[in-house]
Image 1 (cartoon, rainbow, N blue to C red):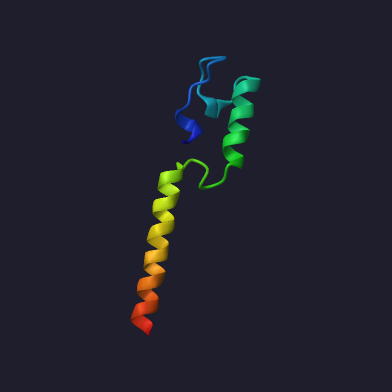
Image 2: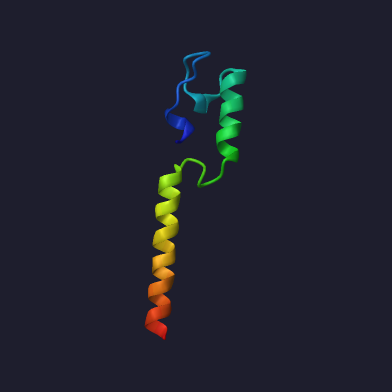
Length: 63
């Protein structure tokens, strides 16, 4: 989930604005998660399976 849609429970402002210390802390935490931080485990597993299938198909075609 991206922080641009989150609303802070402390100040009722968008987290992306960082109006209070809670907003700023959550914004920093979400930014440190990286590009795959917002994906749930099922989506990561599906992505992994698709990548393995693509590599297997490529190896089968070159053999």
